[in-house]
Amino acid sequence: MAKIVLGMAVPHSGMLRKPADTWWEDGERDRKNVHNMLWFRKKNWGFDALCQERKNERDWIKLLSLEEKQPRADRCARALDELARIYREVKPDVAVIIGKDQKEIFIDTTPSLAIYSGESIHNGPPQRAVYAPDKDVTYPACPELAQYLMGRFKNDGFDMADIIKWPVNKWMTEPKPIVPHAYSFVYHQIMQDDVPPNVPLFMNVFYPPNQPSFDRSMAFGHSLYKAISEWDTDKKVAIIASGGLSHFVCDEELDQQFLKHFKAYDFDALSKVDDRLYQSGTSEVKLYASVLVAMQQLGCEMNLVDYVPCYRSEAGTGEGFAFMSWRPGQA
View 1 (cartoon, rainbow, N blue to C red):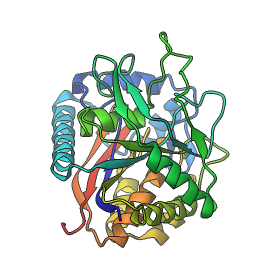
View 2: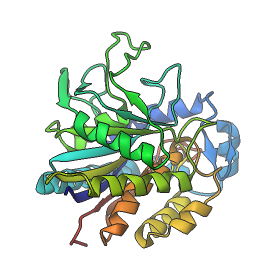
View 3: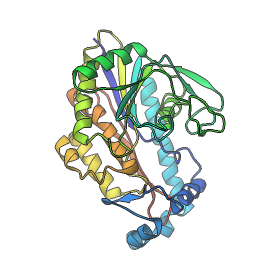
C-alpha cells in the first residue's frame, strides 16, 4: 500500500522572495482595495476605517521600516529554504497538493471541490518570478491517482468537479493554461521545478456562498487519508497544503491560536472558530485540515520551522507566514 511520508503547510504569497523594500507596492494595492477583502476580527473594513481601528495597536512606523522588514524577509527566505531541504531529503514519488483558485482558471464558475485529472501541468511566464521560472515548463500530473481519488471521494459523499484540461486564463495578455499560484508556488519554491507526478485538489475556501465549512474540510481530509493509505501501490506520498495564515490583514493573535490548535490537533477548537474569521485569505487555513488529519493518524509532531508576521501598510495589512512540516517517525 502507499505510504504517506511527508506533510507540509506552505504560504504562497507574492511577498515571499520579494525584496523587502518593495513590500510597499503590495501596501498600495491594499490602500486601493475595492474588492471587500480586508477582513479583520469578524468584519470587513475599508482601508481608512481599518487604519483608525488599529492606529494605537502597534508602532506602525517602526514595523514598516526597512530595518524591521528586512530581517523578517530574511527569516521567510530561510524557512522556505528549510522546507525545500526537507522535501528534497524525503523525495516523495507522488504529491497531492491542496489549494484554491482565485479567479485564475475558474472565471465564470466556482466549484466547491475539484480535482485535476489531466496528464501535464504548465507553468512559466506571465506568472511572477516567485511562482515560476522565466521560461515555459511542463510538470507531470498523476491521472491514475486522480481517477482513483475521485471514485473514493464519491463513495464518501464528495462529488468532485473533474478538470480534464486546464482552462485558459482569458484575462492574461497572452492567454495560457497556467496553473494557479497556490500550486505554482509549491512547484517552484519547494520542489524547485523538480516536480514529481502530482494531483492538484481544489477547495473553494475563498468565495461565498459555496465555501466548505471547517467540519466539511476535515471530513474531506479523512476521506483523502483513507484513500491514499489504501492505494494499491508502494509509492511514497506527500500531502501539501498551500496557503495561510492570516491575510490580507495580518492578525498575530489569531495566528497564534491557529498554531496552538495545529500543534495539539485540536479539531474541535478549529471547528468552533467563527466562520467570519475564515474569510478572505485567512480562509486558506481550512486547506490544512487534510494534512492535519493525516498527520494525526500517523502520530506525527508538528515541526514549526518559523512563524513570521509581515506588514506592508499602516492598517496592519500583510500576512502571517507559518512554515510547517510533519514527518512520520520524526518530531
